[in-house]
Image (cartoon, rainbow over the protein chains, first blue to last red):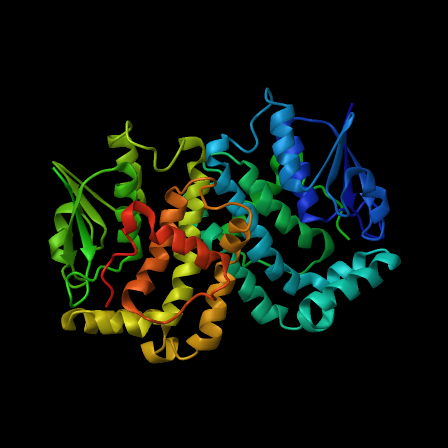
Length: 230
Length: 230
């Protein structure tokens, strides 16, 4: 029986763009587990009450439900120990957790400054109102103002935020080392988010992060490459 | 026989402030290995030629010499496998390497913008000329200009760079998890650098990173706390 994954969707239910949900899509592919994605929208918080969450991703695996991308990743390794390990040995997991925090704390804000109005524009009407109000309150600016300098300061801010990944990818092909692992899925998920909602070019063509992303797009028979874009 | 560690020193040979050398001081303490630190100055590149390096840290362990903090850390785990592991299992090492790259690429520049002239001022005269020329070329600005906004933009930039550590330290006591490991030594080394050369307050008093640093200062009988400050 496929694992059910509640995924953030746009007005077009086939446009799925949450970075946290993409982490789990990639994690499930890595484990070789079948998945059935269900579209979910920001204003459907009640639909996730069964899992004690107001946000996606949420998975349902038989009788079990799990919310939060990190806890889902931990669950998948616990529940499916015979499948390829996702998070690696518990001893080194704190370091992976740092990469998770880095993406959330340093990369996502920088991406939002490049595409936040594009995100808004792909949402269903009922979600647009919620999104604009909550994000404009968080930034203290209109969505249009947040993104106004994306050609200069926005792109430069993202390039700066990605500096550690760039440094590492000059030394090794994947953040995980010789092969991709959850560290790669974290950042691939982050970059899949703008990719699905916007045609804005985030990375310089000669950025090692762009070459790594291109390799990542091809993983799992083009799981990321074939995703529907708005 | 103690391991010899070449360490960057100021005009006062007892002021040792290189973040990379502090990583190794902490690493050696973690492994329980005796160390003899030798002061070294930027303009003494010839003294490191035997190790094929122009920069510290360089260690000499009997007949072996190793340069570069990451390679030294790897060497210590390889050469002393019976002592407490420093980098953890090789499988998860890529993630730790990311934290190393993050400190180098994101944190060090932000610290430099707060204390670069203070670093200059503690150096021996022959090093001051080298330091000013090389750093002003790298920044494209005078040292004084790089640091001019440290009370506002400088401190805010460092706070932003430390966001992933702050997020993680709200969830667990050390970057390594329940106990400190090389991830902690990396960032403790980064913060020991300004601590040794400047009285400028880098972190807000209520920053979880400041509370973590205070715990780190006490490690190994106050190795960091007792270091000589300029």
